[in-house]
Image 1: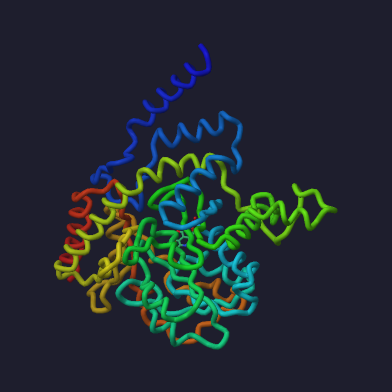
Image 2: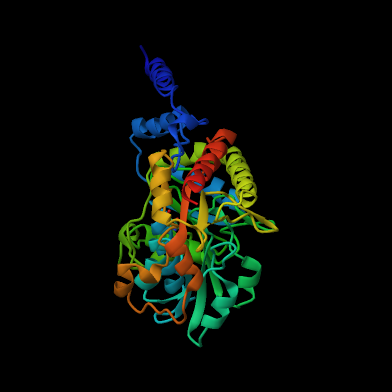
Length: 418
Ligand SMILES: Cc1ncc(COP(=O)(O)O)c(C=O)c1O
């Protein structure tokens, strides 16, 4: 058997073996998981091709995926890395290296965000200032942000939380450098603008549970040529190899071998070819995935708003395209039961729940260890989210029966406990 035949036999076997997986449809009798893996044989075979070629570290597939992702976001550049957390680290490290930000500058960060939305700010020598979120969308509140500005404030991290775009129109008016953490908001838009494309840099995560996945992975997008170059250097040991200006830089250091010429204090945040192989196929699926997530989100919001249950939902704000990452709810302070009782009931029915990201990050023990962290004002909305918020999964593989299950279960619990 020649290698072509072997290859097609392997492909056939993998397609058969993965046939039973619920890539596109999930059985609601299994409950509501946090996510349903949305990859299948196409992704696995492309990753296998990468492995069988023996070219497994960052290479052509990564470049192809970067071009495709930049096009999807409408940006000039995309720099793929090994996680969304790494993309956030890269954003702030690069902005410091480029001189846009200086050590000691203050950066406004929403108090409700992921832990690694916050840490990279301090890890880059900047001062994170936690700001309250808005009760309508759980994203940074532009009014609270304005009140937090001091003479040292230079930047703001807009986290598009759980798929909901932050109010970029109002945030732009603050006159700060905007960085977007769109790690859970693939395909979301504010007006016509894709998230990630509105700030100086935008980041995405391709972790297993996100809209699309590369197992682990992330990417940074930017329109700035200089910033993209610095990112490519910081991503890979701080060397110059992937910089567009590598030749000119090398000429100014004739004493050094350009292959080992280090310009920035960098890291190794590189992705693998297998991750990019996944990404190329996942991107093709994203529009369809997004449509289903958005339909679920819209439908669940509509039904719960009219249900009389003591739960606030977070519908798509006017003029925005909500990417429906997961489905957050806020239990009313007047509910006749505690959040813990409700969540235990849901979990008992195989409806997985989680807190809304890190809750109020100022109340996490790690807040004491984040150098310079400032909390200039009280954070009442973040506190409410911390104390009474939770989310359940949303997925491209869910249909109307999952909505029925969620709402029936919430109503059943409510009727037993009111
Ligand atoms: C808003 C936000 N930022 C950053 C991250 C980190 O991404 P990763 O898990 O790929 O490191 C996440 C992860 O869920 C996130 O939700």
